Length: 338
Image (tube, rainbow, N blue to C red):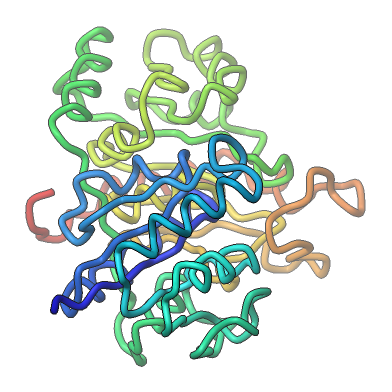
């Protein structure tokens, strides 16, 4: 009988990307299904390590007790040997228990830990990709590399976007000015765009269009606004073609890690030591390490608790531009084909 494992990851987009090394490790010993949200699930399409991708729309079609029971019944029919709780809520733990999965592995700090049969230490200073890999029994070693697999549809979407801008074969730097958390949005992207002489492509969701419009207004046709025009997986394809990505501590940082794109990551209220720094082969992290108030939050508050927001305001466009040029000047490391 084929061993079958279930991975539950219903957290943020970045967490989903960082779960891919765990999925790949488990695929070496079992068929692997993954439960993910409607937002994050498309990122995992084409992943050769996943047997079935199961969407849990916990705020929509699967909302409430009826949706929970329906999904639990579907999972029960798959007869999993083990479940790995990459997202540690009590609801996720109850779901795999309801699905009749006897072995349930998660972090000993998770809200659902009482329903686990195996509790794994949550190592605070580990990268989160390494923390997640520990659920599969991994020990100390090199940092795992996340992977995404854009397909033909994503490549065609990016080709069309760049072709429309007469930039299909032109090198470019990608800028990701957005974040769900307001204090994590570095405020000087438009000034950075003026510092950089290269072609620019602005990536992000539709919510980032105002930020993109400011950049385009300042530098004109040299900047291409791709915000809200691509799926997440197509955005990963676009980032994968960039010479460098400049990003806040947000989802594009992790897309770049999965696509091996050199990254300049700007950290303000948060720090990479929380476990969510870049994993791209070449990356530079910028932040004001001398501020006593930093870090102030695990995610980044909507407003600076002290009102000055120095952690972001005092990182200058010149500092970021210098880091970008440093990465552009470095020869790329040999890598396998994307």
